Image: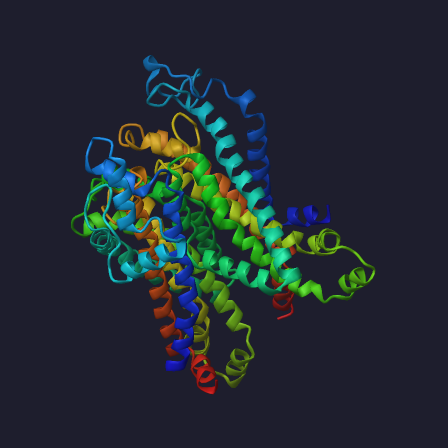
Length: 314
Length: 283
């Protein structure tokens, strides 16, 4: 398992490096001289050229691109992502605080999506072409065709306004969580249900399932112990990716429901052209994404003995 | 034509085809269909109810909602089409070159493609819009910069499979140039998978464009893009929910049409899937 994980880490390092280069390069699109921008934000008067030159020197802006990149990544790894133009606070601290608030929303949404999608997908596959299957597939198709935040508003209209049972927006108890989490879960559960269905169908067509059936193993047992474990392997892979999409999709849902999370934070930063925060956001979410995928790989080893054996043989 | 006839036998795919055809028609004839100027403000007619004059009522500035929806089709669907054309072009070019020549070009291109595919597209687009500043142009640039990777991978995979085929080797032996082989022998073989991918992804593009405009990062007022209309209606949602409901239905309808059509086309054109289907038929 150690060797396998070492190889996975080795594969993810270049992806992380490319993301960090991308995040670093973002700042070079920014119009104007960063040193001048910083000084302009500190006082109303136009900065003196000597002051700009001094700051350029201090920030190393005249050094070669590679040197600047290494310096930037180095301090980022040490936990320093710079200071926000907008709030004047430490970027990393702000991102982390907002990230925790997003997790409050994303984790229940993700669990909800998985809890709905897997049983529905399995049922759909086992009873292929039944009414249940058609209904489930049509729902999934509808869910993936609608802007989920828009559906969220329609649900607000129904539950918060007409029926008055749930609050419209903001962050508080579970009632505040219900609508945005449901909205966020919708798209993910549609994707996962479709995938689970096709994956279970694939495995049900395998020879070992046929063998189990011909041995006289009960239908239920074939599904639960022979099929599901194999069918879930691709689903688990996609779950890692789906969680990343959930974090990205949160930008829209958080804006719609006034949830003060990471997505809302970065959208506000984009309005204000707060480059350190935007850069930090890309690097931060990129890192989260890589870590989540690594966790998925660990889960993979536990689920699939073939991966474990292949790793041992190499 | 044969494909079209077979497509018509699949009721869901046919529904999708009809929706997509109707919306395409709307995009073309929208200016003649729209009863009013979509941006004509009329303060006395704020939030008017539906009437003979304004079939779907007016918005908060007294603009005709139906006209905005119709012209909005041009913005939303036009932008998605533009992005699709660009990413298919870039993706096919990079993918075929990468697959055909291999070596260092291939290695570099594929690492970039891997990294782009590894991350949620919306996240990267958001970052690019972040530095370019809000606006439809930034959103288009951001999406194009990210989404081409899908097509590059598909094209490269097909080229790798085709490169060693006899007819390609024969063309090479006859002295055909790289571009000639690419256009005459490789491209026709990957058209169907690209069409399926593009149909399915265009729905996602419409959703992404609308989402970013909804955040105020895409189309800016007064442009009647559907996502921007959702954003316009957001503040008055409790008093005038129809302002958000109509554009939402328009977006959902367009994406549903493309998804239905794409699923149908995939069943017809993707040989891997139809093989599975015939295997299922013999069960």
